[in-house]
Amino acid sequence: PTPHGEGEVILDAAAITKEAQEEAYRREVVKLIFGNAGLILSDFSCSVESKMTLHGHMYVTTRFICFYSNFFGYEKKILLPYKTINCISKTSDSVFLSPGVEISTAKQGYVFRNFWDREEAYKILRDCHRAGVGQPHLPDSVFPNLVRRIRSSQATRRAAKQAIERHASASSDA
Image 1 (cartoon, rainbow, N blue to C red):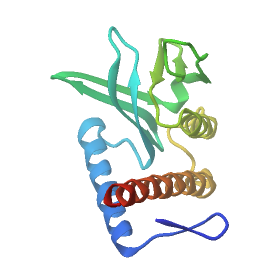
Image 2: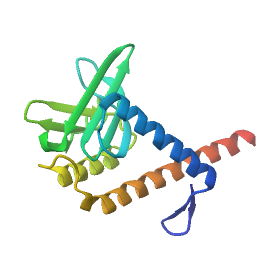
Image 3: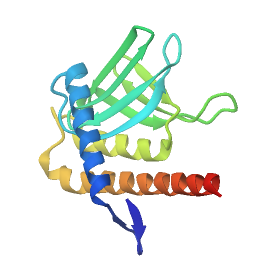
Image 4: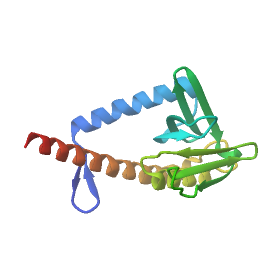
C-alpha cells in the first residue's frame, strides 16, 4: 500500500495478491491449531506470561481470542471465548517489563506483552470483547464497522512499514 492523500491508502495488485495469500495462510494455521475459531479479525505477534515468557501469536476471531506458541516443542494454546472474559485491561508500565494487556476470566488471568503496538491491540481486543460478551460469537451487526476500523488500522500500519523499508533500501543503495 502507498499513502495517497488525506487518510487514503491505495493498494497495488502485487500487494493485494500477497495480502490474500497471507490471509489464506493465517486462516489455515488457525483452523489447524484451533479448529473452527471463526473469522480472523486481527492477529498480533506477542508473548504470554506463564512459568516462562512464551513468544507466540494471538489471533482475534469472531468467536475467540486465541494464542499459540511453540517453543522447542513446548506448545501453549489458549482459547478464550468472549463470554468467559470478565475484563480486558492494560497492565501498568514497568521499568523492567514491556507494557501489556491483561485478560481475566473467572478461572484465570493472562498477561500478554511485547505487542508491536499495544494501544492498537488493546482497542481491538476491548472492542471485540464488548461486542461479544454473552454471545457464542460476535453478532453480524458489529462486523461492518469493527472490521472496517481494524482493516483501516492494519493498512495504515503496513503502509508505514513499507515506507520505512523503502527508505532503508534507498539509504543502503546510496
